[in-house]
Each structure stands twice: as structure tokens, then as C-alpha cells.
Length: 294
Image (cartoon, rainbow, N blue to C red):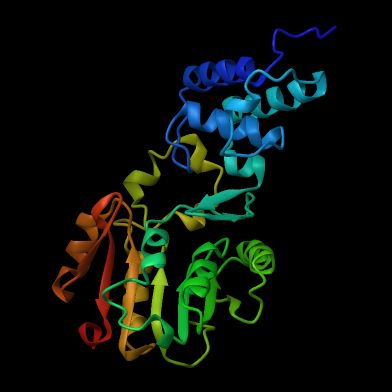
């Protein structure tokens, strides 16, 4: 006999949604709401296909399976740990990546633009040979860039050797050793002396005031990967200042700044930023051409 009221995924799903809503959890790491997150965590824990809930909703679970799922629900609800750290998995578009507490949970609007090859700004994707991705974290964007631009080598830079250890796991997972090179460097300091067709970055850009209001889920992430100084633009300034000397004559710089549009325009508007359209609107990712940086 099972000494628990929970016998099926349906039972656990109802309970998880109630627990997550009751705990006022923040959903900014992939799931949009408590239901989506509960479905993902339950299916992942039970090692079931992530895209097929219905056939399993009323399947009877073993006691230890129920216990495993309940432990995951409690960790998410009580410890406020992002789901990706519980499952060691995060998705960007159609790409799954390994993640743990050494890296920011991947989330980037640039990821939406890579499958389109940054069209129309990149004329010939096959001609892109050298790509630099600054602040790579788990290596997710570098891997997507290498996959999209098939003739390129991507140098993936981070100041955190912990983050680069996670990036190395993902580079191996996608069999991209030699095409994606993890480099320990404070931005450009240790980067090879060559010109890049593309420089792409999703750097720390959260301004000081916003850092003080982050939900608990963000506070368990590496804070070095979030904090961008008083106006959030500290690293962006260095990235833009160094880009001119690193880009090919027709190269481009692509920078994600999240919710910091106003600060970005105040700091760099005089350069003539081109704002790219993503699912969040026209105010999260900007582009600069090499000639604009001279």
C-alpha cells in the first residue's frame, strides 16, 4: 500500500501548481508560469518525453517515483532554486544545454536571431570565418553560432573559469571542440590578435537599482554574470570601446541589454544604434557596424 495521497502525475501536477503559486515563485528561466514549470519538472524527474504529458497523466507511479518528484517540488518551492539547476538542463530554442550553479541559466534574445543568420546584416553566412562571443557563460550562444555559421571558428570568452568548465561540457556534448574555443579572459585581454566578422555578447547589464530588487531565483545565480554597475553599462562600454580594433572592415557587433534600453540609448545613442526585433520587441538587442565604431 502507498502511504501517500499522490498516485499519478496528474495528482503531482495539481499539487505542484498549487505549491508554486502559493510560494509566489518567479518564472524567468524558461517557463512562463507555474503549470509549465510543474509539467517540465515532473516529466524530467520521471524521465518521460518532455513534449508528451497526456499519455502519462493517469499512470500509477511507484512510491519512490512519487518521493523523487515531491523532493523536486519542495526544492523549487522552498529553496527557490531555478528549475534548470535542479534538472541540470536548460533549453535555448531547440538546443538543450548542461547547466549548474556555476553559470547563469541561459536566456537570450540573441538566440532567436542566430537561426536567421542575423539577416539582413550578414550578407553571406558561409563567408563568416571568425566569431567572438564575449561573456559566454555556459557556451550556449557560441555553440549556436558555430552551428549556424558552418565555416566559422568561435572564440568563447569568459572571465569565470568555473563558467568555462561548464562551457567545455557543452562544447563536448555538441562535438564542437576546435570550432568553439573557450578562452579565460577579462573581455579582450587574452583574446587572439585577429579580426572578427562578428562580435556577439549578452554581458552583465543589470543596473545597481535593479540588482537590489532581483527575485530570490536570480540571487542563487553567479552575481558577476548579472551586475553591470550603476547604469548597467559598465561592461558594455568596454566592449564597444574595444570592438573597433577587433572587427573586420565590414564586421558587426551585436549586444543584448535586456530591459536597459534607456540606459543604452543614453550612453551610446550618439553612435546610431540599430535595434533588432525579437519576441520581446525592438529594445533588447542592438547592432553596430564596424564603420560606426571608427
